[in-house]
Structure formats: structure tokens, C-alpha cells
Length: 162
Image 1 (cartoon, rainbow, N blue to C red):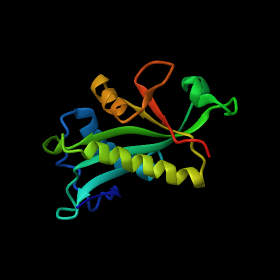
Image 2: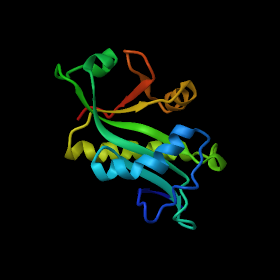
Image 3: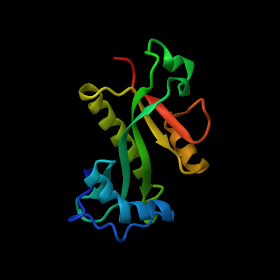
Image 4: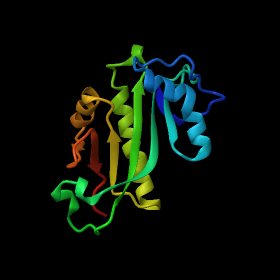
């Protein structure tokens, strides 16, 4: 059975993670723990109970904001004229040998669930992602995320009205 946990460098083996993209591998291996310690981002890892130290996939999350003008008109309605509070997924990756098995969608669903839980405590209106490339952007679009109006590879999903 798979589950998502907060990265624990003493329990989770980051050294064997290989998703096929060096920048995503290096982030997990070299920067994720330090960023967690310094409060820059939190990394959540997907593991299987049968091998709880092996990382199947991960995502990093951080507080963020999005300019109101980056939202589509329908998502701007009744919002104040200042930046919109957000949770950002900076990176999301799945081990190469596990790709194509729905783990990426599972990680994204976990991030949305965390964002919705935080919404009641902190106030969040959107979940945003920075897609590494067009293939990654297509992955997010398939789950209903929309391109920001400013272009680039930042996409978002509204967490709904209160």
C-alpha cells in the first residue's frame, strides 16, 4: 500500500532516486532536506509500506502568491485587488521504474488535499505548479490545471470559493 509522508532524511533513501531528469534527481538528493530545515519548502515522498525507505516519487511545496491578473477572468470574480495566496508545487517526480503507474496523479491529488486542508488554517485560493517542460505542463493540464494568463509554464487550479 502506498502513502505520502514528509521527507525524513534519516529514513528515506534519496541516493537511489532516479526519475530520468537530473535537476529533479539532484533537488531531492542535494537540496530538499536543507530547504525543509530552513523553511523554504517541504518535500513529501511517496513510499510503499513494504519498502518504506525507498522513494517512489516526491513533490516539494511552498507558500506562494499569484498576481490576480495571472488568473482567468472567471477565477478573478469577487477577489480583492492584491496577489492571491497560493501553494506552489515546485517539483514533482516519479522514479523511472515506476512511471506510468498513476503515481504522479496520486502525488498531485495529495498536494491538492494538503492545500485544501491548509485553506481552512491559512487561507489559500489556488494551487500553482511550475512545469519543467511542455510534457510536464500537459500532465498538469490533463488533471484540469489551467495556464496562467501571463504565459510561461506556470499553471494553476482554483481551490474554490469559500
